[in-house]
Image 1 (cartoon, rainbow, N blue to C red):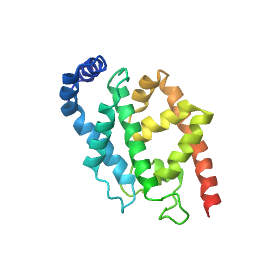
Image 2: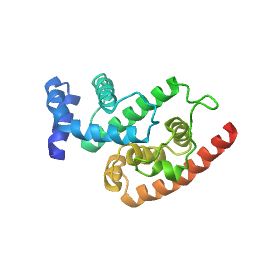
Image 3: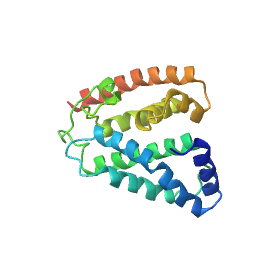
Image 4: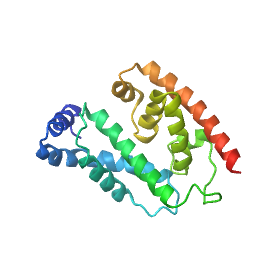
Length: 192
């Protein structure tokens, strides 16, 4: 396991245009990216044809194209990676017409969706819509959910990335779960 400082130094070098830093970085973070992708894939529909390695590779390709990111540290890198993977999966789900009525969606509660468990099958499209609505109301709460749920970051890591206290992260996390539950329940009723 590379030190957070080593990863941060490579990220800073990459931000400054050093392409060799990216080549050194990827082997150091690949296992963590793969674990993150696996957490996403566990929550996906069983019929999903996208594989974990393909998700990591697609995120990598999109990351390489990101020219103006000023990487702050390891936690920032994984937060951006989580956001990219979320976008890829949501785009993939939307392309398979999961928004259509009766499109194979399985209703889940937010509490079920937020549990990290291989048995859960969260509807990422519905959650993504709710997160986008939350961003309009309170973008920091959306970021907390994204970093914790999708990125697998701890409360402390999330607090560091967002530059707030751990207590603030916990308050935002609790409030966001309640808000998202209400938002997702309303959309499920509308679609029924």
